[in-house]
Length: 245
Image (cartoon, rainbow, N blue to C red; front, side, top):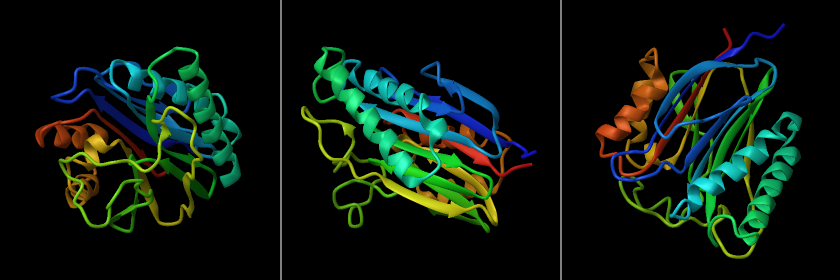
């Protein structure tokens, strides 16, 4: 029988925004509050975690992230291959536009997405937008996701706004999505960090690595606090998944 993986989550509205448009999914659990910390476990042989970072203002981002997370929650149990993840993301995007056209939310509301699906000896990480996934392996923190932003290789992200090149929704008409999906082995694997850009824009990767490598008892909370200490200019949501025990 596969042992479970420990998981820690933290989400915060930040020090500037009036509403938290981020939303997370861990197994069957969807985040409930604008400021919340939680810990539990993921199934060792097939578990998942997802963060959606909504955008659109006037409640539009909150609606968009909830539509997408609830859609993914209803189908991610079937995800076994890259094609499954692509299909699930496309379905979430389609439902987002359906709800947009029905008058719920705002035209152009949207969300980024980042997530991981675990299997016995490997995992799939996926993203659309600029929410990030990192892996802890052999004393290093490695970025697994790919940022969908302009000039990402030339302009520092920290503490600034940046233009997305793709997201779920975010336009008034549907656009073709090209999700980034990566399968990686779990040999020498220590854990995975998922985060909205409220963390990665405020805290440098070497600082993130330092916090994780110190292995605090509540790693998601420590990372969230680092983002708030750096100014908390955006909503921040963090999920840390450890190795099986």
